[in-house]
Image 1: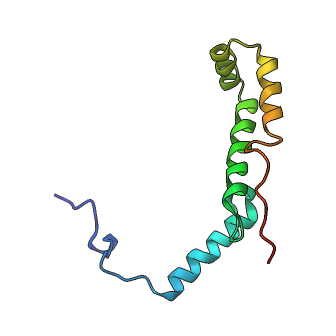
Image 2: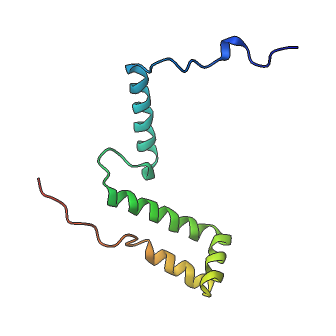
Length: 103
């Protein structure tokens, strides 16, 4: 019977990642963060991250009609009213930003 996995395709779990692997992972992460705004960056604080998550969620709710209809039925509101409410919540999804420390 033929083997489905060749001996060359095994994964070596004992291999320790070296510095070039870490550099490669960091450069890939930086590329993703530059390409997609929602993935954040090194200086992103907790509040800004939460605002991005909430706005992405509300935009998804507004953009997908079945989800919007589901929320409208669950809250016993019109679909247009739910869309309006979600758009209003996108302005300040997590409330006012916290006071920043001046360095």
